[in-house]
Image (tube, rainbow, N blue to C red; front, top):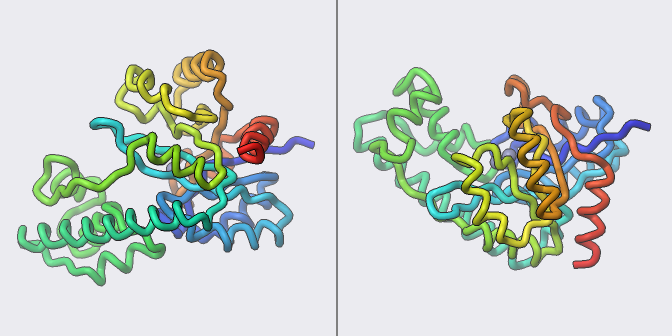
Length: 274
Ligand SMILES: [Zn+2]
Ligand SMILES: [Zn+2]
């Protein structure tokens, strides 16, 4: 039997548009045998997804995607087979959530001072889950008529260097990896193709990763080949996933990129020994 695993999926628990339940149903209907829910900085969708997994007969790997920063570079850290209720993790996620909330309020304050008519309830409405981020603020700005598009909201107000930009509290990649290890999980470097360039990879590879995400919709064939060489030389498990955020998300359809089942088993085995 041809079986496939999509190990990179976002739900309404973070910035995705589909509920965990709907994602699992869809994954089962297209023949995926394993998925991992990897919401940004939250485990809030895992319980619902796992219950739905039992119902639909597919395995839901408990996962997370932690945002980290190495010097000026944003680095995403995927965690798989985590024990999500470990106190170290839930405490840290709570701190991140509060920092994010405070940041969103500061951005709102700046936008209001700039004369834009937007309030907290409008932003909240766009954040169905618990994690409030700039995309939600951008969508609220569009709705309020302040800007023509989400892209324009970022370019005029929200990006670094713009008048409503507020820096964010972030973990370092090492902190994120350690946190994942503390809850018995495997740490995988997400979409290295999104780094400014591959020379950033060198220092990052010094950390204790178990795997590297090579099959991602944003990666070109050349990128894949380059990363396969790196994974091979560094002895890293090769993973893949769609980075699905909901319907109408271009090439990031559920199952668009997948992980070999043997790689999933290697991740699992490593975690059991942790
Ligand atoms: Zn990411
Ligand atoms: Zn992602």
